[in-house]
Length: 232
Image (tube, rainbow, N blue to C red; front, side):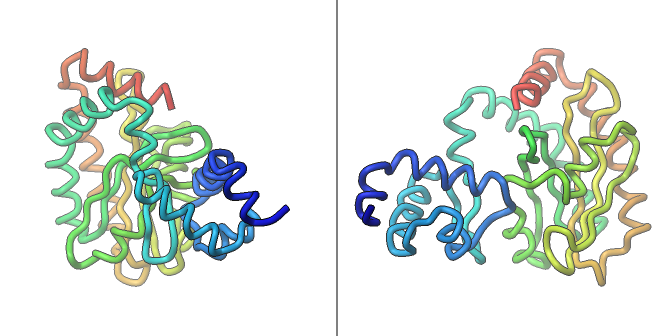
């Protein structure tokens, strides 16, 4: 079968296969996608351009990762309400943690075997690192994933160089009890310069404050957050 028949005969199927490949990783290069999908690079490039244009895929410095368009299609109204809660309730604490630690701060929720990042905050000091943090992360090799899967809600998880060489992430869960959504927050930074002990202490203080802030949310808003997390 020619490459033209593959691309034009089954474009929707191939598009979903590419999205599935990206969902199982922290991002892939064009060459990696070509090897995994069996598509010629020229055909693959055109398809990735189409997926990027629709917002389903996002181009990164090293290749491609899942974009926000897919999640917007799933539940736009609930996502909008969640975004408002995050901005009004959590963002001030996230920004404080970013300033205190000097790292990139992200929050995520479980989405099947992956972690879906719902917010990433960084400044010019870590512009490149902040832009590399993907929308979807594998649970097994990321601190945020381990924090979410831990049976101890007060545990601090660390992943050093497992997703990116030379990058460390320290994370903790925001869910202290059933009233809180299964979210986690992580601080990313260069392994050589991020002060681990200082960051752990700052993270624990911030998590306690954020838990209290979430519990003060209205019941309806907290329900929206919990329902969205359970749906994933």
